[in-house]
Amino acid sequence: MASTRELRELLEIITSIDPESRGSTLSSIAAKLGWPIGKTLERLKEGLDSGFLEQQNSLFRLTEKGVNEILTHRAQYVHDNILHRSRLTTLIERLRGRFGKDVREHLRSAHRLDEEASNIFQQNLQAFEGQVEGVVPLTELKSGESGEVAFVIAGRGLLARLAAMGLTPKVRVRVVRSAPFRGPIEVSLRGVSIIVGYGVASKIYVRRV
Image (cartoon, rainbow, N blue to C red; front, side, top):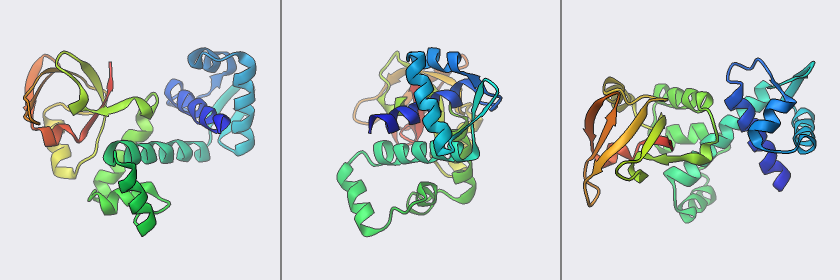
């Protein structure tokens, strides 16, 4: 339903403009969304009624239930639309019962993320500012395009190696060149150029800048 989609968009926007949960005003939320005040207020009331939001004076902020809703949506989106591009693959997993209610648990078990890596992924999802629908693998950026690292889905070893190279969330990178046939990708960040393999680059997810 449109209202469900719009409510989720509202929650995403509140998360991005109020990462410390201090509260956002009706006017600031409406301005960020580009919605009329009336429509924004209607969706805010839905969020309050659903327990996703709470209001204190003129400020709105996410409840714990609202934060969990956003985390679940983001993890679900990453799984269905990035890790499993094929809808058939996702459907088969669901039919086989491999895809449980907890997407994060599924990422741990089916995608071999240990508990520490899974927790880091969850923290990065929560800290991500903006809508997860705008995130793409680094491999999708063309030469000359830039992006901001959103998160990396990998085990502890690779996470540590990428962190040592400076490839961490909120770092801006620019693709210098991509080798053909899924070859290595050269990226520039913080004034330094580094080369990463295609397989590694496919685990780095960015938001186009």
